[in-house]
Amino acid sequence: MDTPSHRGLFVVFEGLDRSGKSTQSARLVRNLKDQGHQVRHISFPDRTTPIGQMINSYLKGQSQQEDHVIHLLFSANRWEAAESISHDIASGTTIVCDRYYYSGCVYSAAKENPSLSLEWARRPEEGLPRPDVCLFLDISPEKAAERGGFGHERYEQSEMQKRVRELFLRLRSSPDENDFVTVDAGQPADVVEKEVLQIVVKTRESIDAHRSSLR
Ligand code: T5A
Ligand code: NA
Image 1 (cartoon, rainbow, N blue to C red):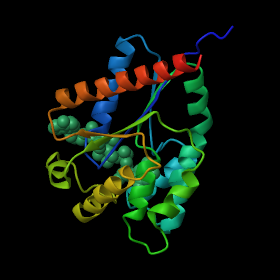
Image 2 (tube, helix red, strand yellow; image 1 turned 60 degrees about the vertical axis):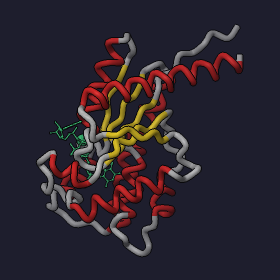
Image 3 (tube, rainbow, N blue to C red; image 1 turned 180 degrees about the vertical axis):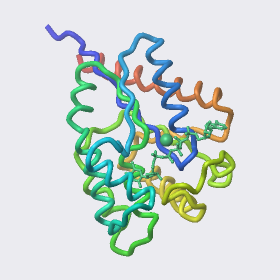
């Protein structure tokens, strides 16, 4: 007899720097826990591993890395976590993740290095656990900059953020990225929080419905 296995969801937040990913991912974790779900909150880059420490030092401007090299380090930092993500989802824990391979692709491609296209950037990400939904917190670079604290890390400059947003929009329209859902992140945090929860609940329902139709 097949008992329905209640796997966890894999929810990713993406967006420009200061779009509210940390704020919203923390609120979603709390809301899902309140509903009785098991949830683990993760973020990339994971600065705690040896590879993550190299990334941290690069982002803070304390070390240099060739563009392809830092790209591959960001990707390796996700691969380090891949097995534990898959394991948790399969055993019923929902993963809420602050940035994933979408950031990996667009920030690297935004450097406009002629041999580092969006297509090239995506390749090392192939085979990573696939999110059920990617919540793209969309905000203009100007509005994000108003939120303060901008300019401390390597990519926090307005020209870079503009190119990053254009590339996120390009990635969103690609048929490979059909898990992308856009949320207007310029709204008050409480409004964004409600929209995010609705989207995640809907994602859960559609997965459950799909499962019952296959049984
Ligand atoms: N990167 C990352 C790559 O190049 N390749 C990769 O593969 C990956 C994974 C570090 C950098 O690394 C790059 C991208 C980044 O440049 P990070 O550690 O995630 O990535 O750092 P940030 O994204 O810069 O994190 P931030 O903390 O800056 O942005 P968040 O999490 O989007 O924003 P948050 O929630 O901290 O909010 C920022 C401020 O806005 C306020 C908050 O209170 C806070 O002060 N705020 C709002 N204000 C008004 N209205 C709302 N709705 C608000 N929501 C939040
Ligand atoms: Na963040």
